[in-house]
Length: 203
Image 1 (spheres, rainbow, N blue to C red):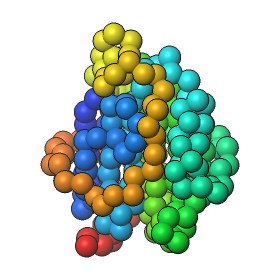
Image 2: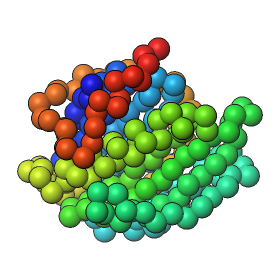
Image 3: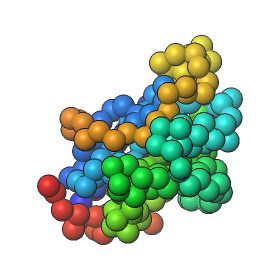
Image 4: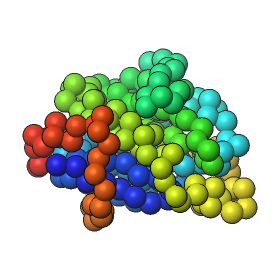
């Protein structure tokens, strides 16, 4: 079964037995993070529309490389839900475990959205498509939301501070945070099949 998050002018679906925390996993932006039972996560951060998506992606990847060293970084452009996203795929090691991170940035009508995922390499084959479906559900719902993303930035700066580009972007290696209950009041889009999420085990 799927749950739905609604807030900050955005909405997306996620497996109902995953943990949701109303903070981004990195950076200074307004955001939310969803954790899988295995410890991987999908995270959304929201920045003012004038923020450069390419600079956000580059800064995030460089911060991971600086933190962990010898990261393999690949520049990516892809289309999800008829929107073009730019970003980076980053592979690195942490405690001798291969880790895969993805950074995807897209400029919406009133804000720049940054979708960051991180998981052990072995988890990618298990949950990689679920993370992609979550991103698709986010992008599919943007045109239908009444909330104005621009209201998050009343003075043209970030919700938290006035820095357009985060200075402290880093991969999150801590355990999942406290679960926050999310209301379920809307059906999923037709192209996303939440039934495929029901077999995800709960630890």
